[in-house]
Amino acid sequence: MKKTLIALSVLAAGSANASVNLLDQDGVLVDLSGTAEVQLYQGIQSKDADVDPTVRLDDGDITLNTTVPVNNNLNVVAGLSFDLAATDKSGATGDFFVDELYAGFQGASFGTLTFGRQYLISDDAGIGKDYELGKEQLGLGPTQGSEVIKYVYDNGQFYFGTSYDINASEEVKTEVNGVEVVSYPKNGGIWDARLGARFGGLDVRGYYYTSEDVNTNGDVDGYNIEAEYVFGAVALAASFGNVDIENVGDSDVIEAAGSYTMGKNTFALGYVYADADETNNVYANVTHQLHSNVKLYGELGWADGDINEYDLGYVAGIEVLF
Image 1 (cartoon, one colour):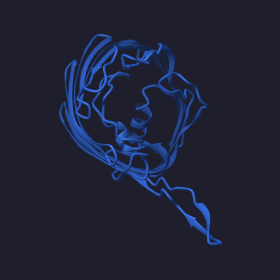
Image 2 (cartoon, one colour; image 1 turned 180 degrees about the vertical axis):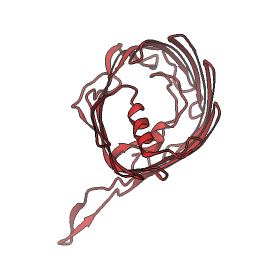
Image 3 (cartoon, one colour; image 1 turned 90 degrees about the vertical axis):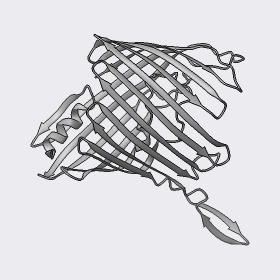
Image 4 (cartoon, rainbow, N blue to C red; image 1 turned 90 degrees about the horizontal axis):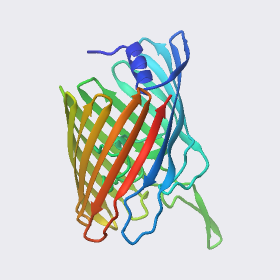
């Protein structure tokens, strides 16, 4: 069914799960949304590591989205998002930064084309149902950039997306035999794509990712084939992927996960295998939905590999959407 631009605008506004409408006038929409998420975090660590648990600021975003109608077939869209919880896994803090800043066009039939700082298509890759402790999941490399061109198309059954991060290097000036030479030593980039289809409760899709002169260990090529099936309160998912890093080697990654929702509680279990060091990883979590905008969760994670032995990891957290 052909979607109207009004329907697309409403769908985009609703996808944030929770938002405040700041402006709705003459078809122009401006919405504000945010996330606050805090965790008690103890990651899966090597047995010989001495790392204490920490209170971790996992997420703290403020996002503005706008849709401006040009005519019956074309909208202009833009987004601005601030990350207020710039922390690493250990909880070390940094300054907040502009997480996303993009603008583009949305058509009733041709999809959405955006330019600027945004997440790549491959940021959505993976079927894991973990919060933090799916240790060996697909590691493609950077999935966000400031020079991204991104296209997304979705007609309800079939969907496609692709993005390219130009990742241009700043010029470097050197002097050779008294002559100034201008070079761009690492003028590489990242390209990725997704193709998928939905058949009732079944969703199948594939991702491809390639980068050049981005990873310090060399060029990266990777793919992931995924399938998810939802029936009633049960959701099952599985995937197979491979990542090949030029100066490191390649690794197959196999993953399976499932969840069951009973009332306001969701129980999830997952398994990940990576053949790089024969690592097996199992995690389990439970989520309680206090409110449509508030959830509490707890998770345990275990891993074992040929190279490393690990201690049990755990996470407890609260997430608030507004």
